[in-house]
Image 1: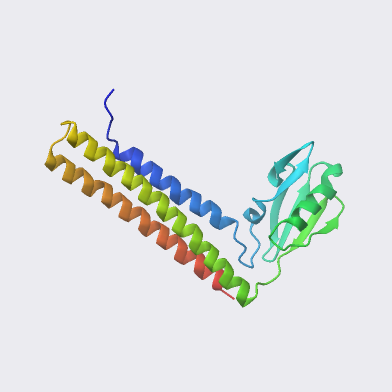
Image 2: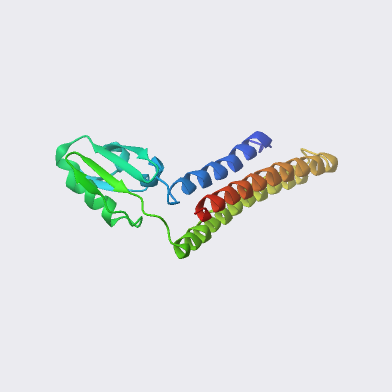
Length: 186
């Protein structure tokens, strides 16, 4: 079976890298309460590790406060422990089946660290996009070598792949700039 060139499939893979980056960005603490802040926290529940959102609901009633409503009373201690032991540096306050989590303001040093981490996430997304681009270019060269497309078609399609690569990298840069501004805001 011959290989197929599909620009939409390449674009979808590149968009996946961008979506993954945005998901990673939601887990970065910016000094403001975000319900996605606790997405990376996993709780030891019912004999296995479960994401926090499967044992409780998270809300942000105030700009610097998260509220975690735990559905099963027996899980309160495990959820509290999981949040305290996470690398987020948060200290929940127990209030029955609800945990209140104050979000402390970030120090300048911590803001710089978070900005660097966001930069690493951004660079990893760009590498993923470039890998998709390379896959597309390699496929086009194989198709030309096999005689399925001519040299003019090769050049045109290579330009198309480069165009979507540039568009996705620009979107990654834009997301990174927005996240950096959000982190560095006092």
